[in-house]
Image 1 (tube, rainbow, N blue to C red):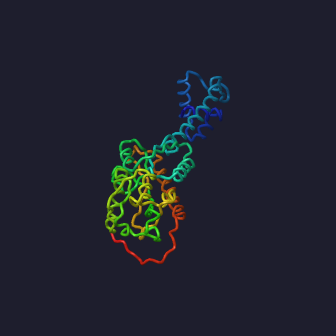
Image 2: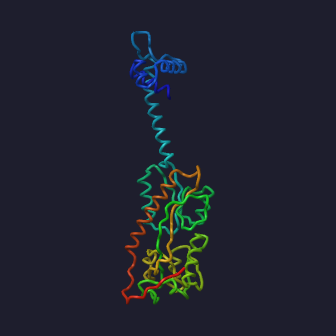
Image 3: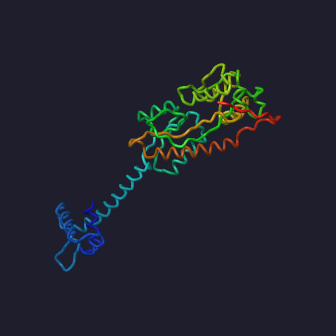
Length: 317
């Protein structure tokens, strides 16, 4: 390809000295390179017998093909650069099962805008399973619930999400503007199975115990409908950002005083050379989308009923 570029320049100038000057090289090496190309092709490309330099019949035939080959080479180089930058191919990405449709839609739209040539294969996977797949090569990037114990992973920016409590609407606590964890004492707690996100599961129970809320029983629900069924039946309370409560009129959502439970969620991807070039960018986009969604959710959060002011309370732990 280098010899073809030299040939095209000489063919454009029809003068070896001017071509060499344009190429930033001496004339003798240029002449030698053209001779090597002619020897390789088995045909003379220039007629050097007259006063000037003219294309031979073989040179004229080669020139058009050379232009096309060089243009194709540039397209290949551009393609390789885009792939190396994460703009092409397929990115296998995991997201938690509780990810809302609004977040998924916004995340896919952001990926399409920033890397239109990249195909994002989104998979609904729990944090625990994502960590296993990231380590085994089954996923390129994931969106996980912190804390995670994975020294072989890079972690992107985490987005803090404050959780409130989901209560039966008939509960006396639903009449309060906010609820302390200690006031939940005596209730059962509905949580996701520990295998979904072990670090976050343990963190929730540790914070609850430190604040005086030791659940009588911990019930497990893998999907929102099952969780809401437990709460509406009076079999426990649950923690959520707020959107879950809007799906069921028989429950109420109230913020937790002092905001003791803050879920951190963010991207994770393998370290080293095996990392997908688009993994970090995906993690950044996911953080942006989650932060915007959390802000919008906070604005739409259901307003607690009016009531007398309650005394300040401090949660230790």
